[in-house]
Length: 250
Image (cartoon, rainbow, N blue to C red; front, side, top):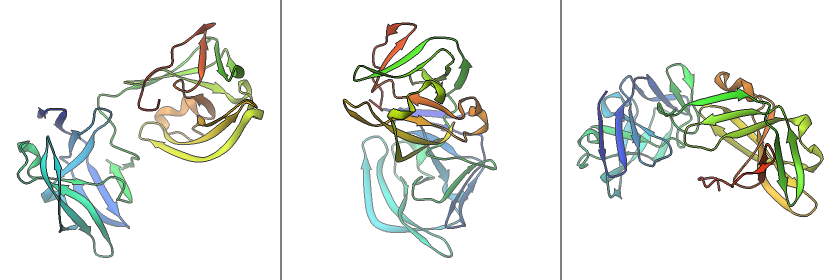
């Protein structure tokens, strides 16, 4: 497995077959994807230019990165549609491994597949692990001094790089304080989450509770359970108030 780094960027060849589609048309199909950590939280995929099936049309623009150099902005054109400014390549990058690769914008595409399974939001990080454990610890959640959830049967989700998350049965949550939200997020490890806002009568706290109603198979243990952002609520664990963690979600 090859690996290189420059500044905060790490590059590593992946082992999964990766396919990318736009409007039903194949954009790229590679068995040698490269994972590039442009930011510390998760990687993005770069694919060899030889594995790109769509046409790449120069947009006449460049984007500069202190670590990756000058990137040529490209339109991605299939037989039926064009995704404008949806790709980058760095032909003269100081990172030699990037020079023959193309970065296809994740959100501009319609579907991404790792092997034959769709993946959402970003590539799965090979160094991230998710463990979900049943527990009898006493969890109590407070907002504005109001207890909004209390349980002795949480499922605790341990995810590399994030604080432990306490998933609670809905019967242990003050459902009368929850207001449905239009917010939906996606996780490559857990699936699609829908949200609630909490109205304690003393304050309104937007999108602080989520639920995976139909999680991905590896995260089935949290199906139908509610979870609060520890960064935004007061969590008492076995009677002891926990410090609010500092994360990208704070």
